[in-house]
Image (cartoon, rainbow, N blue to C red; front, side):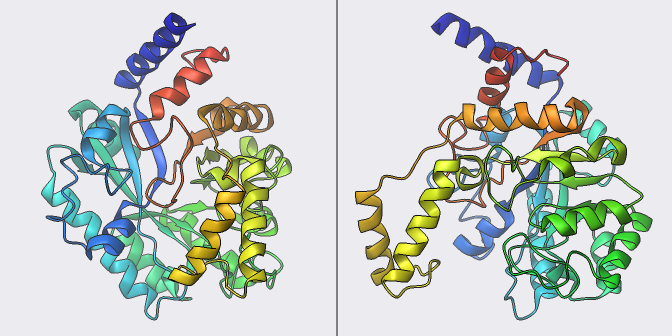
Amino acid sequence: REVTAMTSLEAARELLREFPVADGHNDLPWALREQVRYDLDARDVATDQSAHLHTDIPRLRAGGVGAQYWSVYVRTDSPDPVAATLEQIDCVGQLLARYPQDLRPALTAADMEAARREGRIASLMGAEGGHSIAGSLGALRGLYGLGVRYLTLTHNDNVDWADSATDEPRAGGLTAFGREVVREMNRLGMLVDLSHVAATTMRDALDTSTAPVVFSHSSARAVCDHPRNVPDDVLERLPANGGIAMVTFVPKFVLQAAVDWTAAADENMRAHGFHHLDTTAEAMKVHRAFEEGHPRPVATVSTVADHLDHMREAAGIDHLGIGGDYDGTAFTPDGLDDVSGYPNLLAELLDRGWSKAD
């Protein structure tokens, strides 16, 4: 068994040397904002940052990453989300200027192919949440002009023109202005990202978009019943649309036991008078006590592969991708601990009978 595992892992690494991973979503810019206020000397990602981050250049190389969408995410409650998004874009620009031997700016598929020939990591940007344009098509065009190549229509909260997967429905999907946003993105050449949005919003966007959509970091709802995941009827529409669903690794989105555990932990917090996202010392004491009595379920490489197996059945092999959400989640699956883990996932798929072409 050990020899077989080594063989499939080696085969995965060999495959990645020629066909590197293009990952749909990494929150390194936000982690750099939160941890060090964009002080890149304090988090030199040319060196091992495993004590602080899921992501650095040596581990991107080890993981076979050849292209990365850097998320230029800002919180939905940001007082000035457009300015905060500009700071995130600037952070990506600073990384590109600082590490030109390793990171190459990319705006097009041709740029990504050029990066692969040069042995550099193609660096793209995606804005996570329609709040980043503050209801303005002019701001949308401005982000595109600065190199942003997808917009996730919502984050965890609704925007005025689109419903989120994790908020109370308000628009019933997309409003008339929401459809206008989608059409303008099509006109510009900006990908419509449907991660985080309600299933009604997914369907409205597919009805409206004349270009392929993406799910930059979402898994299969049929495998793990969480609203952040994609229902089968939506996955089944991807071939006609030409779009792609990029599986995410976040344990509470891929492992049903983790979904149930999170719901119980949140309910426990509320029962003790705390908001479930409260991180004050008193709240964390309650949370730690719960975790001691109820150990957190652990996702694995196999958990993620189960989603890809199902998504392949529903959408077809041509409509699958990977969007790990590294540095945007506190927990990761065993074997996918950081950006060096992608070969483990490909090895698991090879063991399951996926061909090298698959």
